[in-house]
Amino acid sequence: MTKIYSLEQIKTVLNFAELMDAIAEGFVLYSDNKTVVPPVGYLALQNPPADVHIKYGYIQNDDTYVIKIASGFYENPKLGLPSSNGLMLVFNRMTGELQAILLDEGYLTDVRTAIAGAVAAKYLAPKNINRIGIVGTGAQAQLQLQLLKEITNCRSVVVWGRNQKKLNRYKETMETHGFEIQTSTDISKVTDSCQLIVTTTPSTTPLLFANLLKKGTHITAVGADAKGKQELESNIFETADIIVADSMEQCVDHGDISYAVENNNISRDKIVELGAVIANPELQRKNDDQISVADLTGVAVQDIQIAKYVYKNLW
Amino acid sequence: MTKIYSLEQIKTVLNFAELMDAIAEGFVLYSDNKTVVPPVGYLALQNPPADVHIKYGYIQNDDTYVIKIASGFYENPKLGLPSSNGLMLVFNRMTGELQAILLDEGYLTDVRTAIAGAVAAKYLAPKNINRIGIVGTGAQAQLQLQLLKEITNCRSVVVWGRNQKKLNRYKETMETHGFEIQTSTDISKVTDSCQLIVTTTPSTTPLLFANLLKKGTHITAVGADAKGKQELESNIFETADIIVADSMEQCVDHGDISYAVENNNISRDKIVELGAVIANPELQRKNDDQISVADLTGVAVQDIQIAKYVYKNLW
Image (tube, rainbow over all chains, first blue to last red; front, side, top):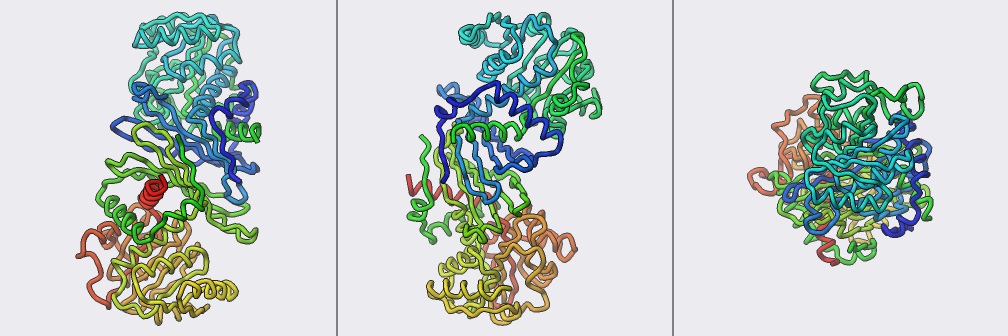
Protein backbone atom coordinates (compact mmCIF):
# COMPACT_ATOMS: atom_id res chain seq x y z
CA MET A 1 0.00 0.00 0.00
CA THR A 2 1.18 3.46 -0.87
CA LYS A 3 1.88 5.61 2.19
CA ILE A 4 1.19 9.32 1.80
CA TYR A 5 2.97 11.79 4.07
CA SER A 6 2.32 15.52 4.51
CA LEU A 7 4.94 18.24 4.84
CA GLU A 8 4.05 18.52 8.52
CA GLN A 9 4.80 14.83 9.08
CA ILE A 10 7.99 15.02 7.04
CA LYS A 11 9.33 17.95 9.06
CA THR A 12 9.11 15.95 12.29
CA VAL A 13 11.82 13.48 11.23
CA LEU A 14 14.49 15.72 9.69
CA ASN A 15 17.80 15.63 11.55
CA PHE A 16 20.20 17.91 9.68
CA ALA A 17 23.40 16.27 10.96
CA GLU A 18 22.19 12.82 9.89
CA LEU A 19 21.05 14.21 6.55
CA MET A 20 24.47 15.76 5.94
CA ASP A 21 26.02 12.31 6.32
CA ALA A 22 23.43 10.68 4.08
CA ILE A 23 23.85 13.27 1.33
CA ALA A 24 27.65 13.29 1.56
CA GLU A 25 27.51 9.51 1.18
CA GLY A 26 25.25 10.00 -1.84
CA PHE A 27 27.74 12.33 -3.53
CA VAL A 28 30.54 9.81 -2.95
CA LEU A 29 28.47 7.00 -4.49
CA TYR A 30 27.51 9.24 -7.40
CA SER A 31 31.11 10.20 -8.19
CA ASP A 32 32.11 6.55 -7.80
CA ASN A 33 29.56 5.55 -10.49
CA LYS A 34 27.47 3.55 -8.03
CA THR A 35 24.28 5.34 -9.02
CA VAL A 36 21.99 5.41 -12.03
CA VAL A 37 20.94 9.02 -12.56
CA PRO A 38 19.52 9.84 -16.03
CA PRO A 39 19.55 13.40 -17.39
CA VAL A 40 17.31 15.84 -15.52
CA GLY A 41 13.80 16.30 -16.92
CA TYR A 42 13.09 19.98 -17.42
CA LEU A 43 9.89 21.84 -18.22
CA ALA A 44 9.95 25.59 -18.79
CA LEU A 45 6.73 27.62 -18.49
CA GLN A 46 5.85 31.19 -19.39
CA ASN A 47 3.15 33.57 -18.12
CA PRO A 48 4.03 33.30 -15.33
CA PRO A 49 7.68 32.30 -15.77
CA ALA A 50 8.43 29.04 -14.00
CA ASP A 51 10.43 25.86 -14.29
CA VAL A 52 9.96 22.29 -13.22
CA HIS A 53 12.79 19.82 -12.59
CA ILE A 54 12.32 16.07 -12.56
CA LYS A 55 15.26 14.26 -11.01
CA TYR A 56 15.28 10.50 -10.61
CA GLY A 57 17.29 7.36 -10.34
CA TYR A 58 18.62 4.86 -7.85
CA ILE A 59 21.71 3.69 -6.02
CA GLN A 60 23.14 0.30 -6.89
CA ASN A 61 21.88 -2.43 -4.56
CA ASP A 62 19.17 -0.20 -3.09
CA ASP A 63 15.68 -1.68 -2.94
CA THR A 64 14.02 1.57 -4.05
CA TYR A 65 14.15 4.10 -6.84
CA VAL A 66 13.08 7.70 -6.42
CA ILE A 67 11.47 10.32 -8.64
CA LYS A 68 11.50 13.91 -7.45
CA ILE A 69 9.50 16.78 -8.89
CA ALA A 70 10.36 20.33 -7.87
CA SER A 71 9.12 23.58 -9.32
CA GLY A 72 10.04 27.24 -9.05
CA PHE A 73 7.21 29.67 -9.74
CA TYR A 74 9.05 32.91 -9.21
CA GLU A 75 6.02 35.18 -9.07
CA ASN A 76 4.24 33.07 -6.42
CA PRO A 77 5.41 35.30 -3.55
CA LYS A 78 3.28 38.10 -5.05
CA LEU A 79 0.29 35.80 -4.49
CA GLY A 80 1.44 35.00 -0.96
CA LEU A 81 2.59 31.52 -2.03
CA PRO A 82 6.10 30.06 -1.71
CA SER A 83 7.95 29.89 -5.02
CA SER A 84 9.02 26.29 -4.44
CA ASN A 85 6.69 23.34 -4.75
CA GLY A 86 6.85 19.65 -5.55
CA LEU A 87 6.83 16.11 -4.22
CA MET A 88 8.97 12.99 -3.99
CA LEU A 89 7.99 9.44 -4.92
CA VAL A 90 9.58 6.28 -3.55
CA PHE A 91 9.12 3.11 -5.63
CA ASN A 92 9.91 -0.54 -5.03
CA ARG A 93 12.87 -1.31 -7.25
CA MET A 94 11.88 -4.98 -7.68
CA THR A 95 8.23 -4.49 -8.68
CA GLY A 96 7.67 -0.81 -9.58
CA GLU A 97 5.04 -0.47 -6.86
CA LEU A 98 4.67 3.04 -5.43
CA GLN A 99 5.66 2.78 -1.78
CA ALA A 100 5.44 6.37 -0.61
CA ILE A 101 4.37 9.82 -1.70
CA LEU A 102 6.19 12.56 0.17
CA LEU A 103 4.04 15.69 -0.23
CA ASP A 104 6.91 17.93 0.76
CA GLU A 105 5.73 20.93 -1.33
CA GLY A 106 9.32 21.46 -2.47
CA TYR A 107 10.70 21.66 1.07
CA LEU A 108 12.92 18.57 0.82
CA THR A 109 14.45 19.97 -2.36
CA ASP A 110 15.18 23.22 -0.56
CA VAL A 111 16.66 21.27 2.38
CA ARG A 112 18.81 18.92 0.33
CA THR A 113 20.13 21.94 -1.63
CA ALA A 114 21.06 23.71 1.60
CA ILE A 115 22.59 20.53 2.98
CA ALA A 116 24.76 20.19 -0.12
CA GLY A 117 25.94 23.74 0.58
CA ALA A 118 26.89 22.77 4.11
CA VAL A 119 28.66 19.64 2.85
CA ALA A 120 30.63 21.70 0.30
CA ALA A 121 31.57 24.23 3.02
CA LYS A 122 32.61 21.44 5.40
CA TYR A 123 35.21 20.10 2.96
CA LEU A 124 36.21 23.33 1.20
CA ALA A 125 35.78 26.42 3.39
CA PRO A 126 38.78 27.94 5.24
CA LYS A 127 39.21 26.83 8.86
CA ASN A 128 38.84 30.34 10.17
CA ILE A 129 35.62 31.99 9.14
CA ASN A 130 35.12 35.48 10.55
CA ARG A 131 32.12 36.31 8.49
CA ILE A 132 29.69 34.51 6.21
CA GLY A 133 28.40 36.17 3.03
CA ILE A 134 24.97 35.35 1.67
CA VAL A 135 23.94 36.54 -1.79
CA GLY A 136 20.18 36.64 -2.12
CA THR A 137 17.32 36.98 0.37
CA GLY A 138 14.91 34.15 -0.51
CA ALA A 139 14.00 30.89 1.17
CA GLN A 140 17.23 29.22 0.02
CA ALA A 141 19.29 32.14 1.37
CA GLN A 142 17.72 31.44 4.76
CA LEU A 143 18.14 27.68 4.69
CA GLN A 144 21.76 27.80 3.51
CA LEU A 145 22.67 30.01 6.46
CA GLN A 146 20.75 27.84 8.93
CA LEU A 147 22.56 24.74 7.71
CA LEU A 148 25.97 26.39 8.04
CA LYS A 149 25.46 26.16 11.82
CA GLU A 150 26.34 22.49 11.36
CA ILE A 151 29.87 23.30 10.17
CA THR A 152 30.98 26.62 11.70
CA ASN A 153 30.56 28.63 14.90
CA CYS A 154 30.64 31.88 12.96
CA ARG A 155 27.38 33.82 13.42
CA SER A 156 28.44 37.08 11.80
CA VAL A 157 26.87 37.55 8.38
CA VAL A 158 26.63 40.03 5.51
CA VAL A 159 23.67 39.53 3.25
CA TRP A 160 23.53 41.12 -0.19
CA GLY A 161 20.36 41.93 -2.11
CA ARG A 162 18.93 44.58 -4.41
CA ASN A 163 15.80 45.24 -2.39
CA GLN A 164 16.24 46.84 1.04
CA LYS A 165 12.82 45.64 2.24
CA LYS A 166 13.73 42.03 1.51
CA LEU A 167 17.14 42.56 3.14
CA ASN A 168 15.46 43.87 6.28
CA ARG A 169 13.08 40.94 6.35
CA TYR A 170 16.00 38.51 5.95
CA LYS A 171 17.89 40.23 8.79
CA GLU A 172 14.87 40.04 11.07
CA THR A 173 14.21 36.38 10.34
CA MET A 174 17.79 35.17 10.62
CA GLU A 175 18.48 37.10 13.81
CA THR A 176 15.83 34.93 15.46
CA HIS A 177 18.11 32.01 14.50
CA GLY A 178 21.02 33.53 16.45
CA PHE A 179 22.89 35.25 13.63
CA GLU A 180 24.13 38.81 13.62
CA ILE A 181 23.20 40.20 10.22
CA GLN A 182 24.49 43.20 8.28
CA THR A 183 22.67 44.03 5.06
CA SER A 184 24.19 45.57 1.94
CA THR A 185 23.27 46.41 -1.64
CA ASP A 186 27.00 46.59 -2.46
CA ILE A 187 28.49 43.20 -3.35
CA SER A 188 32.03 44.31 -2.36
CA LYS A 189 30.87 44.35 1.27
CA VAL A 190 30.47 40.58 0.89
CA THR A 191 33.73 39.89 -0.93
CA ASP A 192 35.78 42.20 1.33
CA SER A 193 35.03 40.58 4.67
CA CYS A 194 33.63 37.07 4.12
CA GLN A 195 35.63 33.83 3.90
CA LEU A 196 32.56 31.75 3.10
CA ILE A 197 30.11 33.05 0.49
CA VAL A 198 26.93 31.32 -0.67
CA THR A 199 25.07 32.60 -3.74
CA THR A 200 21.40 31.62 -3.84
CA THR A 201 19.64 33.59 -6.59
CA PRO A 202 17.95 32.70 -9.91
CA SER A 203 20.06 35.42 -11.57
CA THR A 204 20.80 35.26 -15.28
CA THR A 205 23.74 37.70 -15.08
CA PRO A 206 26.85 37.52 -12.87
CA LEU A 207 26.59 38.99 -9.37
CA LEU A 208 30.09 38.13 -8.08
CA PHE A 209 33.18 39.34 -9.96
CA ALA A 210 36.73 38.01 -10.03
CA ASN A 211 38.44 41.35 -9.43
CA LEU A 212 36.63 41.72 -6.08
CA LEU A 213 37.63 38.29 -4.81
CA LYS A 214 40.06 38.03 -1.86
CA LYS A 215 42.48 35.18 -1.14
CA GLY A 216 41.16 32.63 1.30
CA THR A 217 37.57 32.66 0.12
CA HIS A 218 35.26 29.76 -0.51
CA ILE A 219 32.21 30.31 -2.71
CA THR A 220 29.29 27.93 -3.02
CA ALA A 221 26.98 28.82 -5.93
CA VAL A 222 23.59 27.10 -5.85
CA GLY A 223 21.46 29.31 -8.10
CA ALA A 224 22.40 28.17 -11.60
CA ASP A 225 20.39 24.97 -12.09
CA ALA A 226 19.36 25.44 -15.74
CA LYS A 227 20.69 26.93 -18.95
CA GLY A 228 20.66 30.73 -18.90
CA LYS A 229 21.17 31.13 -15.15
CA GLN A 230 24.50 32.54 -13.90
CA GLU A 231 25.72 34.01 -10.59
CA LEU A 232 29.52 34.01 -10.96
CA GLU A 233 31.54 35.90 -13.54
CA SER A 234 33.22 33.12 -15.50
CA ASN A 235 36.81 34.24 -14.86
CA ILE A 236 36.27 33.62 -11.14
CA PHE A 237 37.03 30.01 -12.06
CA GLU A 238 40.35 31.11 -13.59
CA THR A 239 41.26 32.71 -10.25
CA ALA A 240 40.19 29.69 -8.19
CA ASP A 241 42.66 27.11 -6.84
CA ILE A 242 39.99 24.46 -6.35
CA ILE A 243 36.97 24.05 -8.63
CA VAL A 244 34.28 21.64 -7.56
CA ALA A 245 31.17 20.45 -9.42
CA ASP A 246 28.41 18.46 -7.75
CA SER A 247 28.05 16.73 -11.15
CA MET A 248 30.63 17.19 -13.90
CA GLU A 249 28.02 16.44 -16.56
CA GLN A 250 25.40 18.87 -15.24
CA CYS A 251 27.78 21.72 -14.32
CA VAL A 252 29.49 21.67 -17.70
CA ASP A 253 26.06 21.67 -19.34
CA HIS A 254 24.17 24.30 -17.33
CA GLY A 255 25.97 25.31 -14.12
CA ASP A 256 28.07 28.44 -13.49
CA ILE A 257 30.99 26.29 -14.62
CA SER A 258 29.46 25.99 -18.10
CA TYR A 259 30.29 29.65 -18.85
CA ALA A 260 33.90 29.20 -17.68
CA VAL A 261 34.37 26.14 -19.91
CA GLU A 262 32.66 27.85 -22.84
CA ASN A 263 34.81 30.98 -22.48
CA ASN A 264 37.98 28.88 -22.10
CA ASN A 265 38.62 30.24 -18.60
CA ILE A 266 39.30 26.66 -17.53
CA SER A 267 39.58 23.19 -19.00
CA ARG A 268 37.49 20.30 -17.69
CA ASP A 269 40.51 18.63 -16.08
CA LYS A 270 40.68 21.43 -13.49
CA ILE A 271 37.24 20.43 -12.20
CA VAL A 272 36.73 17.78 -9.50
CA GLU A 273 33.44 16.35 -8.33
CA LEU A 274 32.19 16.97 -4.81
CA GLY A 275 31.93 13.23 -4.16
CA ALA A 276 35.62 12.85 -5.02
CA VAL A 277 36.51 15.77 -2.72
CA ILE A 278 34.61 14.17 0.17
CA ALA A 279 36.30 10.80 -0.39
CA ASN A 280 39.82 12.10 -0.98
CA PRO A 281 41.45 14.59 1.47
CA GLU A 282 44.09 15.31 -1.19
CA LEU A 283 41.44 17.19 -3.14
CA GLN A 284 40.27 19.31 -0.19
CA ARG A 285 41.53 22.77 0.79
CA LYS A 286 45.22 22.78 1.78
CA ASN A 287 45.47 26.14 3.56
CA ASP A 288 43.46 29.25 4.43
CA ASP A 289 44.82 31.22 1.44
CA GLN A 290 43.34 29.20 -1.37
CA ILE A 291 40.26 30.24 -3.31
CA SER A 292 37.74 27.46 -3.82
CA VAL A 293 34.46 27.45 -5.72
CA ALA A 294 31.73 24.81 -5.58
CA ASP A 295 29.10 24.87 -8.32
CA LEU A 296 25.98 23.03 -7.16
CA THR A 297 23.33 22.31 -9.79
CA GLY A 298 21.49 19.72 -7.70
CA VAL A 299 21.92 16.01 -8.38
CA ALA A 300 19.20 13.35 -8.19
CA VAL A 301 21.32 11.41 -5.70
CA GLN A 302 20.54 14.12 -3.13
CA ASP A 303 16.85 13.59 -3.71
CA ILE A 304 17.28 9.84 -3.55
CA GLN A 305 19.10 10.06 -0.24
CA ILE A 306 16.73 12.51 1.45
CA ALA A 307 13.63 10.67 0.21
CA LYS A 308 15.00 7.36 1.52
CA TYR A 309 15.89 8.99 4.82
CA VAL A 310 12.41 10.45 5.31
CA TYR A 311 10.70 7.26 4.20
CA LYS A 312 12.80 5.11 6.54
CA ASN A 313 12.17 7.40 9.50
CA LEU A 314 8.44 7.85 8.92
CA TRP A 315 7.62 4.24 8.12
CA MET B 1 -5.63 20.93 -1.52
CA THR B 2 -4.28 17.94 -3.37
CA LYS B 3 -6.98 15.41 -4.24
CA ILE B 4 -5.90 11.78 -4.31
CA TYR B 5 -7.86 9.25 -6.37
CA SER B 6 -7.60 5.46 -6.41
CA LEU B 7 -7.72 3.22 -9.46
CA GLU B 8 -11.21 2.11 -8.42
CA GLN B 9 -12.46 5.72 -8.41
CA ILE B 10 -10.71 6.45 -11.71
CA LYS B 11 -12.32 3.48 -13.45
CA THR B 12 -15.82 4.77 -12.65
CA VAL B 13 -15.47 7.84 -14.91
CA LEU B 14 -13.82 6.42 -18.05
CA ASN B 15 -15.98 6.74 -21.15
CA PHE B 16 -13.98 5.31 -24.05
CA ALA B 17 -15.82 7.22 -26.80
CA GLU B 18 -15.24 10.54 -25.03
CA LEU B 19 -11.62 9.61 -24.38
CA MET B 20 -11.09 8.82 -28.06
CA ASP B 21 -12.19 12.35 -28.91
CA ALA B 22 -10.02 13.89 -26.21
CA ILE B 23 -6.94 11.97 -27.27
CA ALA B 24 -7.51 12.56 -31.00
CA GLU B 25 -7.77 16.27 -30.18
CA GLY B 26 -4.50 15.95 -28.23
CA PHE B 27 -2.69 14.43 -31.23
CA VAL B 28 -3.94 17.26 -33.45
CA LEU B 29 -2.72 19.90 -30.99
CA TYR B 30 0.61 18.09 -30.66
CA SER B 31 1.20 17.93 -34.43
CA ASP B 32 0.12 21.57 -34.70
CA ASN B 33 2.83 22.58 -32.18
CA LYS B 34 0.27 23.69 -29.62
CA THR B 35 1.84 21.58 -26.89
CA VAL B 36 5.04 21.67 -24.84
CA VAL B 37 6.26 18.10 -24.53
CA PRO B 38 9.94 17.69 -23.49
CA PRO B 39 11.86 14.50 -24.29
CA VAL B 40 10.67 11.41 -22.43
CA GLY B 41 12.46 10.63 -19.16
CA TYR B 42 13.64 7.04 -19.18
CA LEU B 43 15.04 4.84 -16.41
CA ALA B 44 16.23 1.32 -17.20
CA LEU B 45 16.58 -1.24 -14.40
CA GLN B 46 18.17 -4.67 -14.25
CA ASN B 47 17.59 -7.67 -11.98
CA PRO B 48 14.71 -7.80 -12.62
CA PRO B 49 14.62 -6.13 -16.04
CA ALA B 50 12.26 -3.15 -16.07
CA ASP B 51 11.82 0.31 -17.45
CA VAL B 52 10.21 3.49 -16.26
CA HIS B 53 8.91 6.25 -18.55
CA ILE B 54 8.29 9.79 -17.38
CA LYS B 55 6.17 11.76 -19.83
CA TYR B 56 5.14 15.32 -19.13
CA GLY B 57 4.16 18.67 -20.50
CA TYR B 58 1.15 20.87 -21.17
CA ILE B 59 -1.13 22.19 -23.86
CA GLN B 60 -0.99 25.90 -24.69
CA ASN B 61 -3.63 27.88 -22.79
CA ASP B 62 -4.44 24.98 -20.48
CA ASP B 63 -4.51 25.76 -16.78
CA THR B 64 -2.71 22.55 -15.81
CA TYR B 65 0.44 20.64 -16.59
CA VAL B 66 0.75 16.89 -16.19
CA ILE B 67 3.53 14.49 -15.24
CA LYS B 68 2.98 10.80 -15.85
CA ILE B 69 5.08 7.96 -14.53
CA ALA B 70 4.59 4.48 -15.96
CA SER B 71 6.69 1.39 -15.43
CA GLY B 72 6.95 -2.04 -17.00
CA PHE B 73 8.31 -4.76 -14.71
CA TYR B 74 8.18 -7.69 -17.07
CA GLU B 75 8.71 -10.43 -14.50
CA ASN B 76 5.93 -9.18 -12.22
CA PRO B 77 3.37 -11.67 -13.58
CA LYS B 78 5.54 -14.47 -12.12
CA LEU B 79 4.87 -12.85 -8.72
CA GLY B 80 1.16 -12.53 -9.47
CA LEU B 81 1.51 -8.77 -10.04
CA PRO B 82 0.62 -6.80 -13.19
CA SER B 83 3.67 -5.72 -15.19
CA SER B 84 2.37 -2.16 -15.54
CA ASN B 85 2.40 0.37 -12.73
CA GLY B 86 2.53 4.11 -12.26
CA LEU B 87 0.62 7.28 -11.48
CA MET B 88 -0.33 10.63 -12.99
CA LEU B 89 0.07 14.06 -11.42
CA VAL B 90 -1.96 17.14 -12.31
CA PHE B 91 -0.42 20.51 -11.40
CA ASN B 92 -1.72 24.07 -11.46
CA ARG B 93 0.05 25.72 -14.36
CA MET B 94 -0.06 29.18 -12.75
CA THR B 95 1.35 28.27 -9.31
CA GLY B 96 2.92 24.80 -9.50
CA GLU B 97 0.55 23.52 -6.82
CA LEU B 98 -0.22 19.79 -7.01
CA GLN B 99 -3.94 19.52 -7.70
CA ALA B 100 -4.44 15.79 -8.07
CA ILE B 101 -2.68 12.48 -7.74
CA LEU B 102 -4.22 9.78 -9.90
CA LEU B 103 -3.10 6.47 -8.41
CA ASP B 104 -3.96 4.62 -11.58
CA GLU B 105 -1.29 1.89 -11.14
CA GLY B 106 -0.42 2.20 -14.82
CA TYR B 107 -3.99 1.60 -15.99
CA LEU B 108 -4.48 5.02 -17.60
CA THR B 109 -1.26 4.51 -19.56
CA ASP B 110 -2.57 1.17 -20.79
CA VAL B 111 -5.91 2.77 -21.68
CA ARG B 112 -4.50 5.80 -23.49
CA THR B 113 -2.20 3.47 -25.46
CA ALA B 114 -5.17 1.33 -26.49
CA ILE B 115 -7.20 4.43 -27.31
CA ALA B 116 -4.42 5.70 -29.57
CA GLY B 117 -4.61 2.33 -31.34
CA ALA B 118 -8.34 2.79 -31.87
CA VAL B 119 -7.80 6.37 -33.10
CA ALA B 120 -5.16 5.18 -35.57
CA ALA B 121 -7.49 2.41 -36.80
CA LYS B 122 -10.39 4.87 -37.13
CA TYR B 123 -8.47 7.05 -39.59
CA LEU B 124 -6.31 4.43 -41.29
CA ALA B 125 -7.90 0.97 -41.32
CA PRO B 126 -9.75 -0.32 -44.43
CA LYS B 127 -13.53 0.17 -44.39
CA ASN B 128 -14.20 -3.53 -44.61
CA ILE B 129 -12.60 -5.51 -41.84
CA ASN B 130 -13.36 -9.22 -41.92
CA ARG B 131 -10.89 -10.18 -39.26
CA ILE B 132 -8.72 -8.44 -36.70
CA GLY B 133 -5.22 -9.72 -35.95
CA ILE B 134 -3.68 -9.26 -32.52
CA VAL B 135 0.02 -9.97 -31.94
CA GLY B 136 0.71 -10.65 -28.30
CA THR B 137 -1.39 -11.93 -25.41
CA GLY B 138 -0.78 -9.48 -22.57
CA ALA B 139 -2.88 -6.77 -20.96
CA GLN B 140 -2.32 -4.38 -23.88
CA ALA B 141 -3.36 -7.09 -26.37
CA GLN B 142 -6.67 -7.31 -24.48
CA LEU B 143 -7.27 -3.57 -24.20
CA GLN B 144 -6.43 -2.85 -27.85
CA LEU B 145 -9.04 -5.36 -28.95
CA GLN B 146 -11.65 -4.05 -26.52
CA LEU B 147 -11.14 -0.50 -27.79
CA LEU B 148 -11.52 -1.57 -31.41
CA LYS B 149 -15.22 -2.14 -30.62
CA GLU B 150 -15.46 1.66 -30.80
CA ILE B 151 -14.50 1.72 -34.49
CA THR B 152 -15.57 -1.59 -36.12
CA ASN B 153 -18.33 -4.18 -35.87
CA CYS B 154 -15.88 -6.96 -36.68
CA ARG B 155 -15.70 -9.49 -33.83
CA SER B 156 -13.66 -12.16 -35.59
CA VAL B 157 -10.08 -12.28 -34.35
CA VAL B 158 -6.84 -14.21 -34.80
CA VAL B 159 -4.41 -13.82 -31.92
CA TRP B 160 -0.74 -14.76 -32.31
CA GLY B 161 1.57 -15.77 -29.47
CA ARG B 162 4.41 -18.15 -28.73
CA ASN B 163 2.85 -19.70 -25.65
CA GLN B 164 -0.29 -21.79 -26.15
CA LYS B 165 -1.34 -21.44 -22.51
CA LYS B 166 -1.32 -17.68 -22.77
CA LEU B 167 -3.15 -17.89 -26.11
CA ASN B 168 -5.85 -20.01 -24.50
CA ARG B 169 -6.18 -17.60 -21.61
CA TYR B 170 -6.49 -14.69 -24.05
CA LYS B 171 -9.17 -16.53 -26.03
CA GLU B 172 -11.13 -17.28 -22.90
CA THR B 173 -10.97 -13.71 -21.61
CA MET B 174 -11.78 -11.97 -24.87
CA GLU B 175 -14.66 -14.31 -25.71
CA THR B 176 -16.37 -12.96 -22.59
CA HIS B 177 -16.15 -9.55 -24.33
CA GLY B 178 -18.09 -10.88 -27.33
CA PHE B 179 -15.22 -11.71 -29.68
CA GLU B 180 -14.73 -14.93 -31.58
CA ILE B 181 -11.09 -15.82 -31.14
CA GLN B 182 -8.81 -18.14 -33.09
CA THR B 183 -5.34 -18.69 -31.69
CA SER B 184 -2.17 -19.33 -33.65
CA THR B 185 1.56 -19.64 -33.14
CA ASP B 186 2.05 -19.04 -36.89
CA ILE B 187 2.20 -15.34 -37.78
CA SER B 188 1.08 -15.97 -41.39
CA LYS B 189 -2.37 -16.87 -40.01
CA VAL B 190 -2.59 -13.23 -38.95
CA THR B 191 -1.23 -11.64 -42.13
CA ASP B 192 -3.26 -13.93 -44.43
CA SER B 193 -6.74 -13.10 -43.16
CA CYS B 194 -6.63 -9.85 -41.18
CA GLN B 195 -7.15 -6.32 -42.53
CA LEU B 196 -6.40 -4.70 -39.19
CA ILE B 197 -3.40 -5.92 -37.20
CA VAL B 198 -2.24 -4.59 -33.84
CA THR B 199 1.16 -5.61 -32.44
CA THR B 200 1.46 -5.27 -28.67
CA THR B 201 4.64 -6.99 -27.50
CA PRO B 202 7.90 -5.83 -25.88
CA SER B 203 9.79 -7.79 -28.57
CA THR B 204 13.34 -6.84 -29.49
CA THR B 205 13.27 -8.71 -32.82
CA PRO B 206 10.77 -8.39 -35.70
CA LEU B 207 7.60 -10.50 -35.49
CA LEU B 208 5.85 -9.26 -38.68
CA PHE B 209 7.61 -9.57 -42.05
CA ALA B 210 7.11 -7.66 -45.30
CA ASN B 211 6.92 -10.72 -47.54
CA LEU B 212 3.85 -11.98 -45.64
CA LEU B 213 1.94 -8.72 -45.88
CA LYS B 214 -1.22 -8.57 -48.03
CA LYS B 215 -2.64 -5.53 -49.82
CA GLY B 216 -5.33 -3.71 -47.89
CA THR B 217 -3.82 -4.17 -44.45
CA HIS B 218 -3.47 -1.65 -41.69
CA ILE B 219 -0.91 -2.32 -38.95
CA THR B 220 -0.71 -0.47 -35.64
CA ALA B 221 2.50 -1.21 -33.74
CA VAL B 222 2.46 -0.15 -30.09
CA GLY B 223 5.25 -2.25 -28.56
CA ALA B 224 8.41 -0.35 -29.46
CA ASP B 225 8.54 2.47 -26.93
CA ALA B 226 12.29 2.51 -26.22
CA LYS B 227 15.57 1.87 -28.02
CA GLY B 228 16.16 -1.82 -28.72
CA LYS B 229 12.50 -2.79 -29.07
CA GLN B 230 11.18 -3.80 -32.50
CA GLU B 231 8.06 -5.62 -33.78
CA LEU B 232 8.06 -4.87 -37.53
CA GLU B 233 10.70 -5.88 -40.04
CA SER B 234 12.02 -2.54 -41.27
CA ASN B 235 11.22 -3.13 -44.97
CA ILE B 236 7.52 -3.29 -44.08
CA PHE B 237 7.75 0.50 -44.20
CA GLU B 238 9.11 0.30 -47.75
CA THR B 239 6.01 -1.71 -48.73
CA ALA B 240 3.60 0.67 -46.98
CA ASP B 241 1.61 3.35 -48.83
CA ILE B 242 0.94 5.36 -45.68
CA ILE B 243 3.41 5.64 -42.79
CA VAL B 244 2.21 7.31 -39.64
CA ALA B 245 4.13 8.25 -36.49
CA ASP B 246 2.43 9.39 -33.30
CA SER B 247 5.50 11.62 -32.83
CA MET B 248 8.03 12.13 -35.62
CA GLU B 249 10.76 12.87 -33.09
CA GLN B 250 10.12 9.82 -30.91
CA CYS B 251 9.46 7.32 -33.71
CA VAL B 252 12.61 8.27 -35.59
CA ASP B 253 14.55 7.98 -32.33
CA HIS B 254 13.21 4.73 -30.86
CA GLY B 255 10.05 3.48 -32.60
CA ASP B 256 9.75 0.72 -35.20
CA ILE B 257 10.22 3.51 -37.74
CA SER B 258 13.74 4.17 -36.41
CA TYR B 259 14.99 0.91 -37.97
CA ALA B 260 13.44 1.77 -41.33
CA VAL B 261 15.07 5.19 -41.35
CA GLU B 262 18.39 3.77 -40.18
CA ASN B 263 18.34 1.06 -42.86
CA ASN B 264 17.33 3.58 -45.55
CA ASN B 265 14.05 1.75 -46.22
CA ILE B 266 12.35 5.13 -46.12
CA SER B 267 13.20 8.79 -45.83
CA ARG B 268 11.62 11.01 -43.18
CA ASP B 269 9.47 12.85 -45.71
CA LYS B 270 7.39 9.69 -46.25
CA ILE B 271 6.27 9.84 -42.60
CA VAL B 272 3.24 11.82 -41.44
CA GLU B 273 2.16 12.42 -37.86
CA LEU B 274 -1.08 10.95 -36.53
CA GLY B 275 -2.31 14.42 -35.54
CA ALA B 276 -1.89 15.58 -39.13
CA VAL B 277 -3.74 12.50 -40.41
CA ILE B 278 -6.66 13.19 -38.07
CA ALA B 279 -6.82 16.85 -39.12
CA ASN B 280 -6.37 16.30 -42.85
CA PRO B 281 -8.52 13.75 -44.76
CA GLU B 282 -6.04 13.99 -47.66
CA LEU B 283 -3.56 12.06 -45.54
CA GLN B 284 -6.00 9.28 -44.60
CA ARG B 285 -6.51 5.98 -46.42
CA LYS B 286 -7.84 6.43 -49.97
CA ASN B 287 -9.04 2.91 -50.73
CA ASP B 288 -9.18 -0.62 -49.32
CA ASP B 289 -6.03 -1.73 -51.18
CA GLN B 290 -3.49 0.48 -49.53
CA ILE B 291 -1.11 -0.73 -46.85
CA SER B 292 -0.83 1.61 -43.89
CA VAL B 293 1.36 1.38 -40.79
CA ALA B 294 1.05 3.44 -37.61
CA ASP B 295 3.99 3.41 -35.21
CA LEU B 296 2.85 4.44 -31.73
CA THR B 297 5.56 5.15 -29.16
CA GLY B 298 3.25 6.96 -26.75
CA VAL B 299 3.25 10.73 -26.51
CA ALA B 300 2.88 12.82 -23.35
CA VAL B 301 -0.09 14.60 -24.90
CA GLN B 302 -2.10 11.36 -24.49
CA ASP B 303 -1.25 11.35 -20.79
CA ILE B 304 -2.08 15.04 -20.51
CA GLN B 305 -5.47 14.53 -22.13
CA ILE B 306 -6.49 11.43 -20.16
CA ALA B 307 -5.30 12.91 -16.84
CA LYS B 308 -7.27 16.10 -17.48
CA TYR B 309 -10.32 14.07 -18.47
CA VAL B 310 -10.22 11.97 -15.31
CA TYR B 311 -9.50 14.96 -13.09
CA LYS B 312 -12.35 16.99 -14.60
CA ASN B 313 -14.82 14.12 -14.22
CA LEU B 314 -13.82 13.13 -10.69
CA TRP B 315 -13.54 16.63 -9.29
